[in-house]
Structure formats: C-alpha cells, structure tokens
Length: 362
Ligand SMILES: [Zn+2]
Image (cartoon, rainbow, N blue to C red; front, side, top):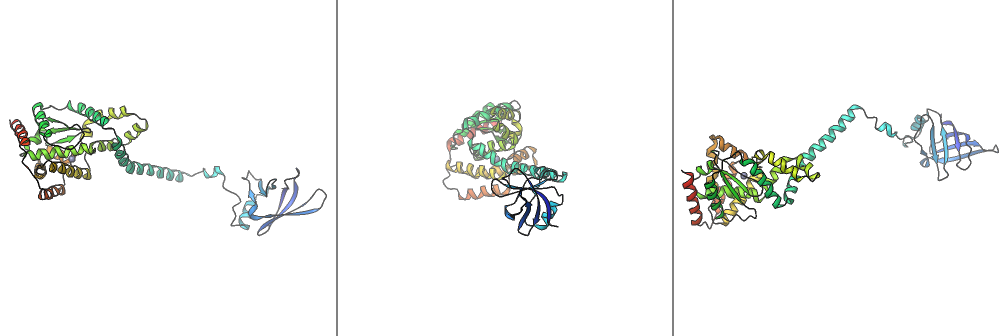
C-alpha cells in the first residue's frame, strides 16, 4: 500500500524515468531502470523532501540541492497516504485561495473584531489625542479660536457694558499668574452661570453676580474659570468632543475646518461638562492663586454653598451641569479655609467690588 508508480527525474538528464516509489518510515526509496537497463535505486531522506503546490491531480516532490531531483505522481490517494504514513510531516500546505475561502461566520467575526479594535482605539485613543493636541497647540491659535467662538456666541446675548468694565477692573486687581489675556464679559441673563472659552475669554451671567454677597465669591468664581483657561481644560474638552472630526482635520492639516466647526457649534462647545478631575484641578489651582493674593478662600465655600442652595433654580442646574458640583468639592474648600494663613484685607479689591455691587443692585 506504500508503493506508487511515479515519474522520476534525476535532475541531470532531460529524460524522466518510470519508477516505483516506496514510502519507508524515515525515507523514500525510488527504483528505476537507467537507459542501460540497469536497476538503480535512490534514497530520499524524509526531512529533505519538499512539495510543490499541488496542481489539480499532479503531485510534485523535490529533493536535494540544485539540480534538484523530482518525482511526479498522479495517484489521487497520494496525499491521504502521506498523511497516514507521516502524521508529523506536512506535505501539502493549504492553497492560498483556500485560506481566503472564508465562510460567512468567519467574515462577520473578523469584521466585528476590526470594529471592536476601532472602537477601543476611539474610546481610549481620543482622550489621549485631545490632550496631546491641546498641549502642543500654539497659544496664539488658541486665543484666535476662543475669539471666533466668542463672536459667534455673543449674537445671542446682551452685554452689560458697565458691569463688564467693572468686573475686568476687579479681575485686574488679582494676580492670577497666567500668560493668557483674561477678558471677561458680563451678559444680561438671570441664569446663575459662567463659562470659560479657550484663550482667556470668560463669560459671566449677571444672574450669578447679583446673588453674590462678598468680593471673595466673585474672586473664587473668576479664579476657577481662569484655571480652566490656564490649564487648557476648555481646549481639551472641545478637542475631545470634536472627536473624529479633529482627528480627520489634523490628518488633512485642515485648521480652517476646525475653526469653522468651532464657530458653528460655539454654544454647545462652551457648555460642555468638565470631568470631575478637571473641576477639582480648577478648584485647587484657583485656590492657590487666591491664596497667593492673600484673598480668603472662604469665597469658594460661599460660592459652592450658593450654587447648592440654588438647586431649585433651573439656571443653577445649568451651571452645575457645566461645572458639576460635588459635596467633596465643598468639603475640600472648607479644609483649605481652615489651613489658610496670611489673609489680608485688600482695599483695592473691596473698592472694585463695591462698584460692581452698586451697579448690580440697581
Ligand atoms: Zn469648572
């Protein structure tokens, strides 16, 4: 059962011999009669035998260095016999076309795997990308970006020019230690709200100023918003929400495209929710800035208490949704107040605050 009729080619003569192949346990024996009629036998050691791709029903085996010896066999049971005789050795690899003859289940599986990988990349890669891009973004471009958003948003608001001027004077009396040009705009709106745009623009609703009782509360609100600007929270948040679009624009090096999208979606982007980590950072850095100015951190406690007390008010809910207030933020502020030393009464700041109060109480 291990004998096959084959055509043997010794690699030197151009003619092939009719031969008998015997499959021995660790080698092949080939018997044939040479042109002079003499019986000749050739031995192929098993490890040296290589197989050609099998074309239809012709099986080709090669052996040795160049010029290689060759065996051709047309017996259809050859592959099966080889498998039985030498279970360890692979003679016939699958044809490439077979590998790609996938069934539907496999195709669906592969597609799902690819989608999952893309999803994972998007989910985990995007925050990283947003951070990486934000940290390399030129400040001048960031300022321009914020200004574009600001101009697009302001059509919807009525600016209180006098309160705006007074609040900017108030802010100038505090050293926030930032290289960003801080420009505050107060708009006429009952909402207890405020937000920061990338590059230094801060919009404060007069509704929140009217609810404040001390200069420290306003200082705390501004310090918090300035930190969102200075640590590029706003920029990071926007990049993150632009998501795939940002990625595409960067690939295409299309900054104008980003600016257009920013302009079209200014309102939505300005009201993005900050993560808890960013809120905590804005509080911590804001408190550090105020402490550096000798301003009492009690303003943070009062501001948080004011926001919490405003829960019934829809407007306050909006501020809470853009800057989520958690109890631990309030607790953290209380702890900082306890620890604070070197509070001084800033007469200049008090003077600016009195101007604001006079205006907002009218
Ligand atoms: Zn915030």
